[in-house]
Image (tube, rainbow, N blue to C red; front, top):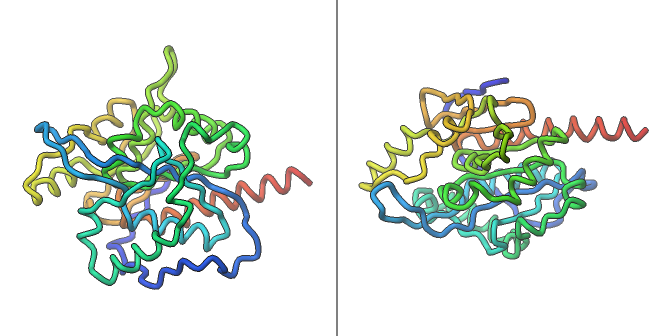
Length: 273
C-alpha cells in the first residue's frame, strides 16, 4: 500500500486537445470507464438535488489514458448519455470550464455509451482495467448494480487495475453473495470524506446526501484511509485497487494506473513468448 499526499492540486491543464489524430503509434489496450447517469440525489432531509459525473475527473482521466496509448470505452448503468454535475461545472473558472467542456464534447463515444449489461464476458477478456470517475451521481446509481459487480469480479480475479476517484468508490459497494465476503473486505482504500461532504453541504445550505459513502464502505469492511487535509492530493494503492480521495489526485492516480496497465501488458507479452 502506498499513500501519496503531494500537496495542493496544480493548475488544471487548459490545453486539452480533442483531436483524433494524436501522435500515438498504436493502441496498447482498452479500458472501461463506468459513468453515472443519475440526474438527482436524495438528501438526508428527504429533499433532492441535481447531480451527475465530475467533469474535471472524466476529462483529465481520459486525456491521461489516451496520451499513454490506451483506448477508453464508456458504459453507464442504463446506456443513457451521462451529464456533468452542474454545481461542479459552475465552480470552475470560465477558462477551465470552457476547456473541459470542449474536451468532453469531443468524446462522441460518450453520447452513446454501452449499457453495463451489454459488457459480455468476451469483451471483459479484452479489457485491461476498470475506471470509476466520481461526481455525486455515483452515489445514486452505481451501488448494487449486478452487472458492475460481475465486471468487478472479473477485474479482481485477473488482477486488472480497478481505479476509483472520490464518489466513484460507490461503485465498489456491491452486496456480496450469500455466505461470501464483500469483494473488497479488508482492502485499504480512500473515498470522498464524510467531513468534507458535510462541509460542502453546509456551505450550500443543503443537507448531506442520504447515502453516506464513508459509512457504507466502513460497514462493508473497508480499511479507510484519509489525508487530514481533505482537499489535498491523496491516493491509496492496495493490490489491484487504486483509490483517490478527491479530484485533486486524478492525474497522479491515472499515471499510477498506467504503471499497473503497462506492467500487466508486459507480463502478458512475455507469457505469450
